Image 1: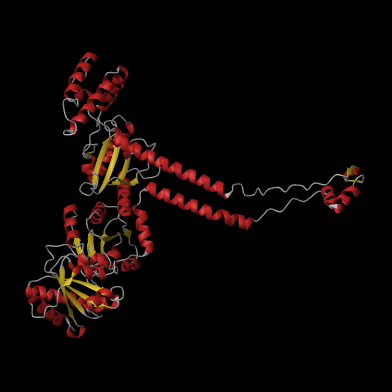
Image 2: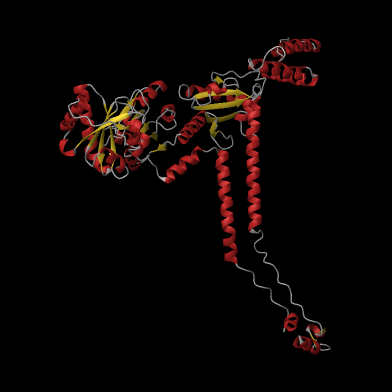
Length: 578
């Protein structure tokens, strides 16, 4: 304290000349200039996170509002019906006649007269009567409605399907690919587009669904199928209730060929069909063994390509890989002597030619062909493929190998030939498959099989119970006993005829549980999961990822930039500081 007070007293009365000859009193304590804040980084991390969270919430609220608006719009009780027909009055009826008809019908369909719980259509009828009277009893609303009806009398005829709220779920929902147009009768643009639409409908007849929704008569459904702020005619490709691709008038080729090309691209995108242009791509596509592969050879964006892709992609209970090619060189390499258009199916038989379908392409015939060939000839045995391998027949034969290459080159063809011989000699069909040691070691140890052996599985109650609920018997044919297809067929026939000593029955559930589930690469599963999300869900996911990226980037930017150095001090301030 004494030293501080001494320095303060010594400084009293002293003065010095500063800059410009002005005297500065040093009796007062010199104050340190405050440091300026770093303003290079405008927003702090907290502000950036808050802005991003608000943006995500606003977008989510908008998506929710749009979905809610679409759902409520589709619940239009009028369903495009004529209001005069609802009230059972002529168009020139007076206000008194309208009121009289309303009272009579309201009493008839009132809940006091009819139980709405037992007859739900009575409630809908009452709501329609009330809505019709609300419009026709108001002179201004009635005048507007009559004017709209007069304009709609100039209707646009079409051979395509008329879609309304009443038949939408029956026709479109869960029924495959549809090309849908939303239009109004009084629009000059829709009148001009009608001829082009009819040509598109004729070209696509028998391939996918083609239909129209009249916005003037079914406003709820039409509004939901249109994009936001879009005018009529509105054209889009739908898979059930999910939009696949929309025709953008300012970007796409609005012609018959352009619309058909748009449909072909939308279907290929929906069913993940790849385009093969090089021999290497064909070789990689053919060598896949996890799924049945379908290859279309013919003109790109043609009716046949659309039909085959839609038939293969829409096949129920099938996991097909689809590819298309328009190059004749690729087609000749896939199947020499083939004439396009043709459809080739590879079922996992190594070195064998594909099953082919060519000629006139009709949807029913193509679907029947794919239905017959939708399963792998030699599927691999996993927990989720046990029903495919062993669940369709009473007897199954499985080749056990240590490497898939060994299984492809030797055991597959031997087992297939043996199964064919057994069927021709005994008349019993034997399902075939393969199992690799390593991933399936537990299952192989369960039945006592080793690499190179053949496992014969019998399921006597396969028709009466689900897979995993019954019991089964397993027979192991050692590799030394089956050196060729004839010897293997002889062993399998002995097992089927009962000459081999029957082993004890095992619980099928325990064997299925010992099998490992079939897994796919992580990136493939992530891509498929993202593809199955809706557009709104994908946008929300991307926004969330951007938000996380900003949270991680803000501290990194601050660490790179570092604190801002203080500004240079003036001479006067430096002297005072000294």
